[in-house]
Figure 1 (cartoon, helix red, strand yellow):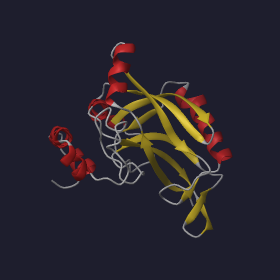
Figure 2: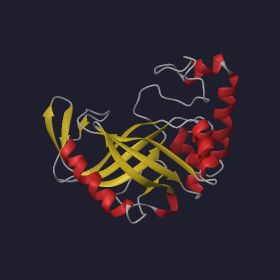
Figure 3: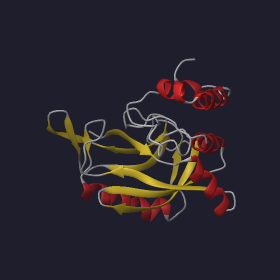
Figure 4: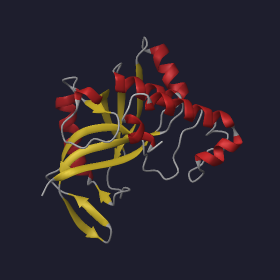
Length: 220
């Protein structure tokens, strides 16, 4: 039986990339990164066969992207239908690099898009989440494989990257070796209080909107 399949990987976009994109694209924010990965067990124990994912990505490119309606939402969806009130971005193009689906994404000037832009511009590390419908079959202990009936719906930005220990960082800190997977935000805040201030400011802005606060940061 088909079910909603949602899987997340880290989407890397630094504040410098956001600012540079605005300068080069007349104020538009366009970013690129890995959208999904085939032939690898993800955090949910699912494996996407490359031939199936290639079929669906091509179909998505030939319809949604070609017709300029490859829309995605901000935060975890609970439906197979794109909610236009929560649209934050539009996928402009997709390609393959090995087993990775790489894509170019335009952040739209919508309410959710503006939140997404501010988060990425502040150094928040977010996840990109594939959304699709399909069935799975167990192939080994704690591992299931997505089946031929899989249908790709699109990709959404979410607050919980599947990479353990992923968190926000100011541009340049990663290269200095201060940010590593497994180090908590609290630990990094002791290195530089600016990180905690950025986190608190963004949190307060988002919480003023209402329910988004609980979705992104939990109870406050």
